[in-house]
Length: 138
Image 1 (cartoon, rainbow, N blue to C red):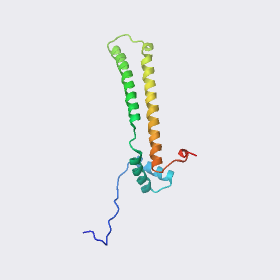
Image 2 (image 1 turned 180 degrees about the vertical axis):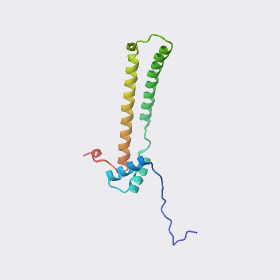
Image 3 (image 1 turned 30 degrees about the vertical axis):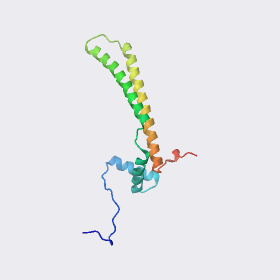
């Protein structure tokens, strides 16, 4: 059927299937922001373009540096495990610096990634005008 002047073009629609977890998040956002589902989705789509990529160039460099640290500690850990497999006597106190370094690097990565994702989430909500009350600055 050809479209005529009497039948204006309909707005584009999006139909998508959500996992139960994603639907629960959407329902949570609807309740949190007091907006209809479609409006929450529209705002997030607009904001995702305006907010830009999740990782800035600076954040990407930080992730690369953290990955380098993990590799260094991983090499040390690998050397300890190879020595154990060869049957060499490896005292636990000799391996403590490796384990401590691994723990410190994992903690640093966790802190950095948490900071990056929290900051981006806050930025995305601001762009979408879906600001949480505690994010509003006086």
